[in-house]
Length: 420
Ligand code: DI6
Ligand code: FE
Image (cartoon, rainbow, N blue to C red; front, side):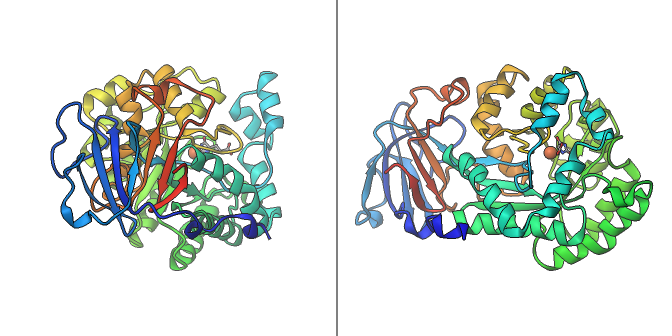
């Protein structure tokens, strides 16, 4: 039903050609031939892949027959990467927004039967097609801004069939819209009410039944846990990590969002791709993440929505050299955000990231947080053609403006999906 209204990825024009006159944002492009200071860059695309990057007018003659695209001095970035979302769910939770405005905390709302569990009810009631139709405009909003790769977590099903439904919708969204989707199984997001008081039984179910079954169906690119006093303990988290390791699936963690549970150090011991939220991250956690090469994913939308005041330890992460990514954490409870550029702005304004840090945070480091560092998050030859042209003189404008969708041209998976 819904699928008939979506243009297929192939219906967009091919981006194969020579893109002339680009000004790549500093640090987000690797050229095959050095581009002199102040000169424009040209990017050659063929077969949907970036074939060559270098100074304008210096492309190898072999590409001469390709069409030309004049980018007229546009600022260029790689396609944006949103590395932490809970995009597929039923219902919405505006009532909790009102409760919090009246003074309730997130933890109080959760303990009163709201929170994640209320989205679980709505998600279980929705069919796969309904979930697809609900998630589609959310994903489209992110894509319109230049997102070319996105992570989508399960975690609102909390039972095999319903987690499967969420992950299948995530895969279908990627195919329907022609965008790289990485799926993350977050069965250990909350304790479903039918397991109240039986947290170990539910953790066993996640590890022994849900994860193996969904992994066998090819639906799981990574495994995540909400390690928190209102969710899963450190021991339960480790049990899930062991199950993931046994299947050879990488892990990531919702760590130290509301309290310091020691989750980041545990995740680092399991070689986690990322630790996310990390407002209460300790010095030990930072050292462990640095040693393991784990990315710190900052989620200013959740910080803002919860009116949190405990800042993540940005200066210490920076000093340790831990790569920092920035993401929407799109979810119906704590971050109903549909703009990754707004998150970049908030990461600067609320968390004091520099502009280059925020831009790396929504591109190269976000790609690393998904294990996509070799294919996404950088304009470079050999990679699928994912890049965005912006009507900006200064790369800082990407984080400076907020509240509009400025992308002029979007090339996603080798197709010109916006502009020309
Ligand atoms: N941390 C979050 O910010 C989201 N999940 C999580 O583990 C919140 C999810 C929700 O409230 O629905
Ligand atoms: Fe989250």
